[in-house]
Length: 189
Image 1: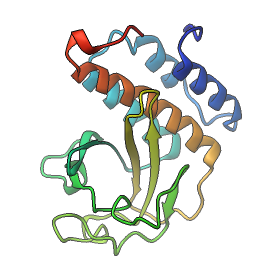
Image 2: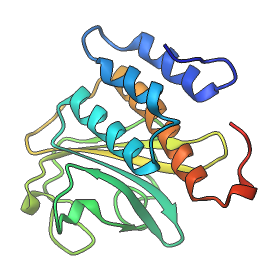
Image 3: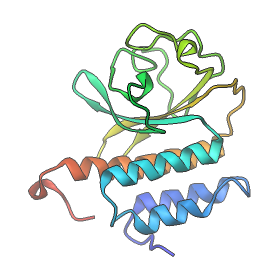
Image 4: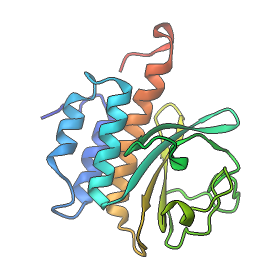
C-alpha cells in the first residue's frame, strides 16, 4: 500500500475513494498510485486516462492543461492518428469559452452532438454523443480538465466517481507540470 502522510493529493484520492460505490474502483488505482513516482509523465497520464475510461465505461478520455491561448492536450486514450478530440483546443472552446458555464465539479452534456470542435466539425460528426467535463486543480494552482466522451447518450453522472477522478486527475496534472519544470524550480514532494 502507498503512504499518505505528507502527500495531500494521495490523501484526497484516498478520501474520495471511500465515497465511491463498491465495485467502481479497481486494483488499477492501487497500481497507479504505487508506480506514479517511477513512471514517466506520459505513462502516468496514459494510465490515469485508462483508469478513468474503465471506471465510467467511456469511449475516450482526454486531459488538458492551460498553455497560453490554448488548452494543451496532455493525453488522450485511446490514441488515434488524426483524432480531432486529442489535440490542443483554443481557450474559447467548450466549456472554457462559456463564461457563464464554469463548473466547479462537473458539466455533463447528455446531447453533445451539436457542439463544434475547433476544426468546425461537430462532436456528433466524429461519433460522440455525450461528454463530461471535470475541472482539475492542483495544489500549486495549476488548472486543467478531464473530458470523458461516449458514443452513446449518457444522461446521469455519479459525482462520487467524479470526485475520485478529479482527485486522480489533479494528482497526475501536478506531476505533469512538475516534470516540465527545470529541476532547479521544483520543490521537493
